[in-house]
Image (cartoon, rainbow, N blue to C red; front, side, top):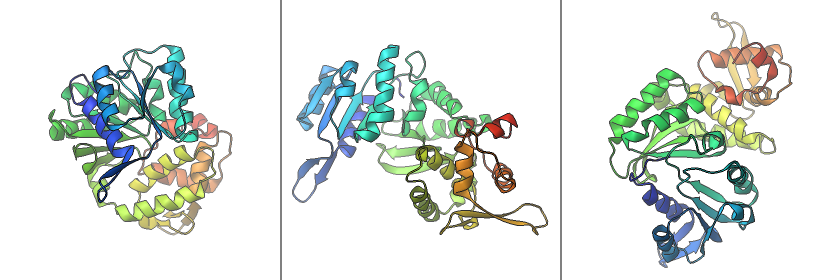
Length: 319
């Protein structure tokens, strides 16, 4: 999401170059990671530049999106205004084709309102911004979509202004799966730093052991590999594990150890996998243990309402 003249096209070309082609430095050859590169709404100048590097680049329109081949990269530029029919095709591409056709969908837009993009935000892996100060309203809208608390929104925007200052080559991105706000000081792929995790402050986030978190996340992915809502489950787990001390989670079975009272006499040991499944299962009734864990998690962590589907919690306004 970027304003005009802020380095958007340069960023797109770098993303495609870094993620769609593998460079063999010893043989000085490039190998294709994707069999096709499709260009939608890309102007003639940028199309020519793509074709110099990617001989398989093809220009298409929205009607041709469903017909794109497997293992393809699709670049969609300048989404200024699209019809409802075009929105449906783009939604299907992002939500279905990207997974079932093993495609990478990269979209560029100057805004998120009045062009149907706002309704698609949950389907993206990342939302990326240049450092232009003019992006602040759009960034705020993205944070609001993901239910970031007002005080945290302001903290993140303050960091955005302080770090970015409109400088070229500095990009910020919101990770829609891990629910983190991040910055890259050098063309998106270098000098990465996490500004904050949804529901935590900067100090808490800096003290978290990254290696422990990565290990627990890999374990969780195995537990939910066949889960229909595994992406949503992974997002919730990422939020929780970035809030809690990783030492509270047993790595072999992903159970959380906690005390239910201040005296520390009543200890609970409950599966975080079961808990997340409970949050996402619309009609599952809670057990006392799950409610105890829910109260414990809520005491230190904010889980966005879009991830809580359980009807009981919604009815009790317990989210």
